[in-house]
Image 1 (spheres, rainbow, N blue to C red):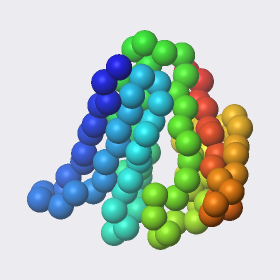
Image 2: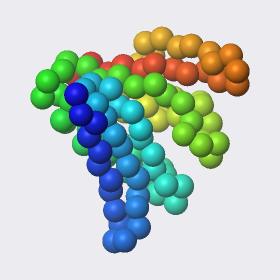
Image 3: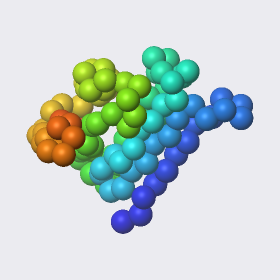
Length: 105
């Protein structure tokens, strides 16, 4: 299974990126100045359209890529885009809660 990657640009400026493998989204990242403008949802839709061709669901592990967004903001974003909690686990070393989310097509 290969990892697929898509990056969105505004002229020469990177808006954000997404990568996925099989039916798992690995990275969704939108640069700070472009957040709250719908680009994250567009990135998700791009990957989901490809994933729908072979699978009936998509899943991801939701955690802040950097500290510029809170866990609750992140979960609100994914919920708005149709993702539901599936499971979670705590990483003991840093006591970070990782939420596994799923979206069925």
